Image (cartoon, rainbow, N blue to C red; front, top):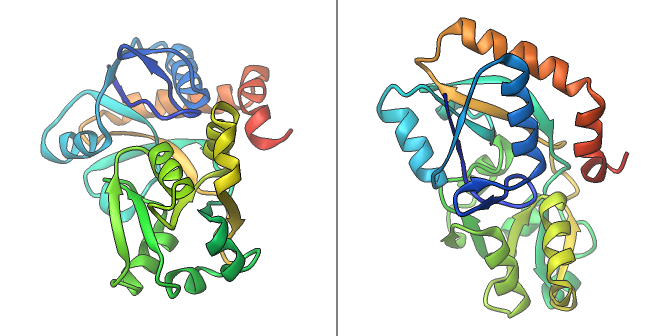
Length: 234
C-alpha cells in the first residue's frame, strides 16, 4: 500500500523523499507494521493528495489528516491517530498589543488583519466556517507554515493559525523568531482536532478494520506514549 506524506515537522519529516522522523509518521508506520500491511512512503504535496483521492481509485492512505464533510465524500477515515492541542494565532508583537492576550475568533476576523493560510488545508470545521462568515479577509496562500511565521516576524504578514506543537518546533530551531511574534490562545477555539489516516474510498473495509485494530493497539502502547509525551506535556 502507498502511504502519502509531505514534509511538515514535527508531524512528518522527510529527507530526500524518505521517512526521517516526525511523530505522526512514526505512529502511522507503527500502525501498518502492527496490521501486517507493507507500505511504501511516497512524498506528495497536500493538494495533490486530495486531488488523487477525489479523482481515481488508489490503494493508498495519507497520514494525519483532518476529517471534513467534503473529504468524507471521496475518502475513508481510520480511527484517530492523535488529537492536536487547540489552534492559536501567531501575530506580530504590535498586533498582539491591540488584540489582547486571548482574543475571540470574531475579534480576530473583524480586526482587518492580513492572514497567511496553508494552501489546500482545512483548519477544522469551526475555523473554516468562521473565515467564510468573514469573506473579506486579506488572505495569502502558502505551502509552508514555517514561512508564514517568518513573514510575520518580518512584518510582511499579520497573522496565521498555528498548532502549538508546530510553533514549538519552529522556535526551537529558529529562536530568533520569538522576538518578532506572539502566540495568542483563542478564547473560543474548539478543543484540539483529531488527525486520522485518510484512505481512498476504494480501500476494502476489511483492510480498514485491520488498520483500526492496529491503531487501538498502538495508541495503548508505551511507544505511543513516548512519541507523544513532548506534544502532550505528559
